[in-house]
Length: 384
Image (cartoon, rainbow, N blue to C red; front, side, top):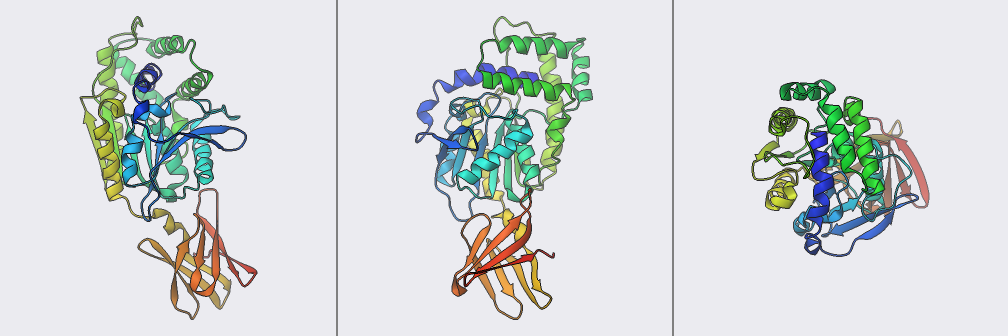
């Protein structure tokens, strides 16, 4: 679906955005993520136990393309939508727009916004492999996933070859690549950079989209577009477009059906009312998908990463357990106390005037803790 998604995104996002601006609430803000600024819109208010909802757009799509869905669901949770580096009002970044780099930069952005996990990630088109990479990289921070007609990150080189064999077109990929390149003439540099990255991944057999591994088996909804869309006016598609679309769709139903079944709370929805921009034509369906995931999401899955024992000495150990949406601390020979969250990794024990600072690795898993009390800092590694 790489090339089909590209045509819809580049040609469609700019058209859709024109009448969507009025649906947005509140002005966006420019947030520095280390040498360049991203255009971000935050809506809603953080609520105890409620995940933050993160929106990841398709290739080159501006904030307005979300059609106000990000604002609609902000009645129950905080939402964050943004434009990637070089897209829309966001400044260009220094690194190439690989899915790995984009996921890492999103993680930095969330820290800058003081938006601790858990997260429900919403990804449209190219946003699909991006949120899958983010979720696989930071699995303890993910409460749910919603894929909106996503780029098929499970597709292999052999899969794409099989599609063109069904269509009966030799060198179809090269022809479609040439067509897509022509569409990009005069497009902003950021869009071109993202397209070139997609092209590079495709030439590598799509393997880079799967390099981070599988996302955690959290509540998941996949929305697939079953309505075919004509290509841009005047563009000659190589072969029978309807046969191509059906071959791609059959493959996507198989791939994403397996992805949805990985989770006990997974759902696949095929809509014949919408093309690639489901959130433009059926925003109510996207809102339903997000609310469904929110309703099934486990509160604060990221707290599990802190559970374990932290020995200061062989005879003095702090044990961290979980009680619903709270962490509990119990020192050797003492009663258990509830910890109050101060940040994503810092908690306070107000009754005794102490603070716990968890140390984490690159994936966000706890490796140790620091007990801060009476002006002293004592560290203990995580044992189990």
